Structure formats: structure tokens, C-alpha cells
Amino acid sequence: MKKYILFGAGDFGQMALEDYGPDNVACFADNNPNKQGQLVCGKPVIGFEELRRMAEDHRIVISVYNPRPIAAQLEESGIFDYQQYFPVRRKLAGRLAEELAGKTPRGVVLYGTDGYMEQVVLLLRELGLGHLLQAVAAPEGNRLIGRQVGGFQVRGLEETGPEADCYIVASAWNHSALRVQLRRHAAGKLVMDPFYQRRYYDTEDIVFARSQERDRTEEEWNQAVRQDGIKASVRAYVEAAKEQVPLFELVEIETINRCNGVCSFCPVNRSADPRPKAVMSRELFEGIIDQLAALDYSGKLALFSNNEPLLDQRIIELHKYARERLPKAVMHLYTNGILLTVPMFEELIQYLDELVIDNYQQELRLIRPSREIKAYVESHPQLRKKVTIVLRKPHEVLSSRGGDAPNRRQLVSYGEETCAMPFQQLIIRPDGKVSLCCNDPLGRCTLGDLTKQTILDVWYGPQYQMVRKCVAEGRKNWKHCEFCDVFSLY
Image (cartoon, rainbow, N blue to C red; front, side, top):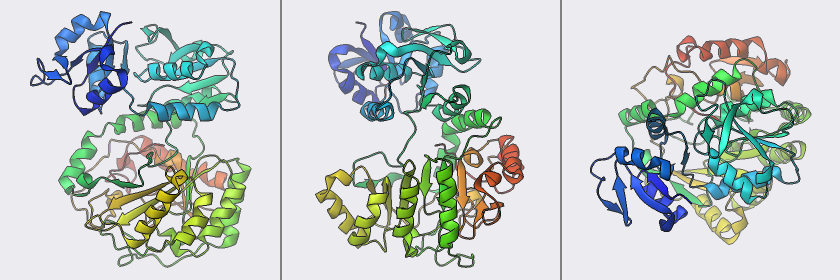
């Protein structure tokens, strides 16, 4: 068996060394000349030219947090047979096993070749399904088509044949775009995307902190957004989705438009909210849920948006109704936790797939309700996968919210970039009006009215079509979007 060369000798590479096993690793490679010639965890560090000479006799693994530049460097040098170290491999295996439970596919096609593909192959073999693999496919025009990657000759999707009945996304980088393409190509067949994040915080840590990010200045925030590689994935997704718009993948229902927080980054904090108070009627709420049930909706559902959901005293019974009608939906809830009690938590958690408590405290200390919930979860460890308390500061610098964030001054135009949110989100205000997206907290843009229209009439209606057409050609074409610095995908 060929030994591995780990391309990246930092923390990520050292994790990879531990996972692959020192006896299976020949050396590290790194572009940093200060590391070349040194030993890291007992392994020599070589430069890129030496890696090129050794590539044919070794297996190359990219072991850095941002693999795209390394992948481009390898491919420009004619090295296409590499893989990407994936530190959450066990979680990926769990997702594949869950989605395949009770299903017996006759033939499997993997779609995507970005270095994670080999990991998916190995996982399928571990699940006893390796013999079902028929082909590896790549999007039209991909330069890997016709090449050997990971022991497979890469084909175009149209060349994989009609006998396959299961298609699995095998790319972490553009998985959202590939998922859309597969659902269109393989309508009626099993399509799986194990890279799709069902949870926002995929951790069993009860308390989660990113304190180093919470002290960023505006300039540091802007610099991070400029360097964020997700913009390329967003462009790929919009290109795939704009021809045949898929059904939304997230629904947010704001049942009351009030918050009890004082966060300086929020345009609707309790000291600044200009919106007239509104509470969604039970009739409207149930009508929306019933329409989603008729669609057999299985995406994400949140009974909150730009508000504090626990201010609605009906919130538990609303979740109960939604869970009964939408058993396949992934239901999550964000709260600042101020009003949360243990008895309320015990009732609420049975209907949720994920509860996130944003613990706002400037010194990052747990507030009393968070301490109580933490103690409860510690004594009920089966809840660890469902509950995360996130340490937050009420005076952070966060996204610009399309220019609406009160504590942002240094706005940057992203006019040439596109956005996936009009293709993925349905955001419903208490009066039934549908907002542009979750970053339209004041409801400046209304794309429909669910007191007068059906969900599908709104989603595929002229207002949404106009927004999508404009944003697909650049955020500058829709006034509220040009200075928005949020880039995300589901």
C-alpha cells in the first residue's frame, strides 16, 4: 500500500497524522519555507517540488483548513489523484447510514470529485455497500472527466446510465449545487447529500464559544468576508438553481415580532425596534403548517426569525402542532434563553431537533437560565446532540444585515456577487407577509402575502422571480442586497 504525503503541516495536518497513523505517513509537505526541512511529530516536511517528484509513488492528502488553493496548485501541476482530509468522517458515516436505513439500492453513482470522494467510497465500503458503486460522475465541463481518480474513471452525469437508483453527493465544496443538479437529473430516485448540515452546531459540547471572533473590528469582519471561499460555492449553487428553482429548504415563521434583548448589532432590539407589534393568529399559523404538510415538507423549520420566540406564550403548543403535522421536518429554535425555565425546556425539547441558546453576556459568563439548562443536559446526556449554549457578546460586530445593522458603518459593496437565499429561504412575518430573507429584519421587501396567496403561489410568483433574476446577475441589482455581507448555503 502506498504511503500518504500530508500536504499541510499545521494543526490540521497533525490531526490527519493521528487519524491515518504515523506508520502509514511518509512525510508532510508544506508551502511555508520555514517549515521545510524541519520535523513535525517526527515526520520530515518537504517542499512542493519534492512532492511532485514523489507523487506517483504516494497518496496525496490535503490537510489544511482551506483546501481550495492547494487543490488548484496540485491540479495545475498535473496531480489530480488526491484526497482531502475530513476530520468529521465518523459523522459523515452516521449520516450515510441514517439515510440508507431500510433502503436497498441496486446501483450507486457518486457525484463530485473534489478530494472528499475517496472518503465517501471508503465509507460505503465500510457500510457493506462498496459492491454497489457503479460510477463516479462530475459536472459537465469538469476537467476530471475521462481521468482516473481514486480508482474510478470519472464520467459525465449523463453517461452514468439509467440502471443506477441511488445518487450520492461526494463533494463538500459545492454539495448544495450538486444536490440541486442531482434532484433534477434523477427525479424519482434516491438522492443523498451527506454533507448537508441538519444542525447549525454539529457538536456534543454543551457550551460553545468563539471568543476570538467575538472581538473582531469592522475591518477584521470585512477582511474575513473578502477572503471567505464560500462565495464561489454560492455562485455555483445559484447557477444550478436559477433554471429550475427548487423548493425552499428553510422556513422561518415569526409568530411574534418582538425581542427582549439589547444587542447593539440588531436592528430590532427592544430599544430600537420600529415595527408595530404583531402576533400571528392561530388560524394563519395552522394554515401555513397544513400547506407544508401537503407538500410533505422535510427541510428545516424554525418558529422564529428576527425575534425572541419565547415571548410568544403559545410557543410550546405551536411546536407541538408543527411536529405532529411535519414529522420529517428538521425543527430548530434559537433563543436568548432569558425566559427559559427547566420545565419549559422539558416540554419544548421533545419537539425539536436542535435548540440553540445564544447566551448574551459581555464577559461570556453563563446567565442563570443557561446554567440551569447546562446542568440538566449534563444529567441527561442523550440531549447533548440537541442542545448547544453559545457564548455571545451583545456588542459584537456581525453582518451588515443589508445595511440595517445599527453598529456597522464600514459597508462594503458586494454588487458583483450573487446570493442563494432567494432560492432557499421562505421567511414569514406575523401578519403573513413574506420577507426578502432573514437579513430583512424590518420587512423592507415584501414578496407575497399568505393571508391571500398559497405558499407555492408566493414561492414561484412574480416578486420572487424578479428578485432571483436580479440577484443572480449581481447583488447590485437589488437595492437591499448590494451591501449585505452574508454568504451562506444549506
